Amino acid sequence: MPTTTVPPDAALLRSRQLLTASEQLSATETTADVLAAAPALMREMLTATHAEVVVAGIGRGPASGVAAALTAPVQRDGLARFYAGPAELMAARPALAGDVARLGWQAAVCAPLPGMPGALMLAWSQPRAFTGPDRAFIVTLILYVTRALQRAMRNDATIAASETLQRAIGSQLPHVDGYELAARYLPADATTTVGGDWYDVLPGPNGRLTCVIGDVVGHGLRAAAEMGQLRGMLRAYLVDRREPPSVLLRRLEAANHALGEPTMATAVVAIVEPAASGGHRLRWSNAGHPPPVVIHPDGTVHALTGNDMLLGMRRNSPRHTYTYHLPPGSTVLLHTDGLVEDRERHIDESFATLYRRLRAGGRPHEVLAAAAGLLTGVRSDDVAMLAVRVPGHAET
Image 1 (tube, rainbow, N blue to C red):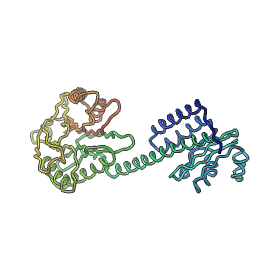
Image 2 (cartoon, one colour):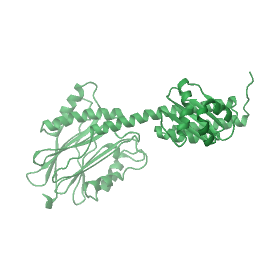
Image 3 (tube, helix red, strand yellow):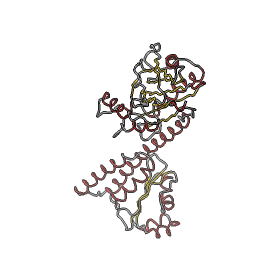
């Protein structure tokens, strides 16, 4: 059987084109990205008039109906069709002859996406002979597109799951008389809307406000699921019991160990409440987390030291409750370590830069904006921030 020899220059060009296709398709993240990128690649590399990926009835343009009809037999039997001229094309699908003529298609390829309910359709405005190397090149491109689509569909499923989880978890701040609240959450993974960081605010009687921030080790859906479990247990304790922060964290740690392999996490439980001497009292317990920060009305910034072991290490690890007096109009900032971790900067420098930024003070949303200014470039960790301002003299 005769074979077609590819000239060295043509073989080198195709090799480079395949490398380019692999790089560009690897950069896609969602199904929509692939459905936009793949046809553009095919048109450029194969000088095609039209290129379209048909997947589960998703339409991409005015020729989508014709493309879907042309590829229907391919999707049924999994056999590629190469139509070198208009006679072959119209003979294969006579019912589409009018549409094909209107679109000016003189040659076409319809090929299945291996292992997927879809196909790729290419068309040219001139007849085209498909040599063996041509067919091999097209089939290889289709394999690349298929792999990109499979990966993108997994990403889409992850995004959908994360959005569902985000709605289920929820982090809407309550309205609490006398307090001002603001929060931000920034996941490290651009393809998901949740991760292992969380914050919570639960109002209680007599002006009591319990604030929580935490960070489960890891990223993505698994960290989010573990976070949801820890958060749910802690919320139950916060609603059911009026206990010091250290006791609440001890209960959480006991439950964390009792339910199987413990989740590694850091957390701060902070209780803000009116003080008998005026102003407000802050009581907190810290499980391996970055220190809470207090911004005084005059711009003084104070990091609250006092730190115990992170959650998940030892069931009976000692926990302590610390106390700090909040002058009227003070703001408490809780944040996860993603805010201060930077590969280009030592963490001590990051903390110092953060505290300088916070000296301007302001309302909670201004405090968060100042803190977020620390984030530059690509982040490798989730970031959660929660700011609480207690009433000033004229507001009490």
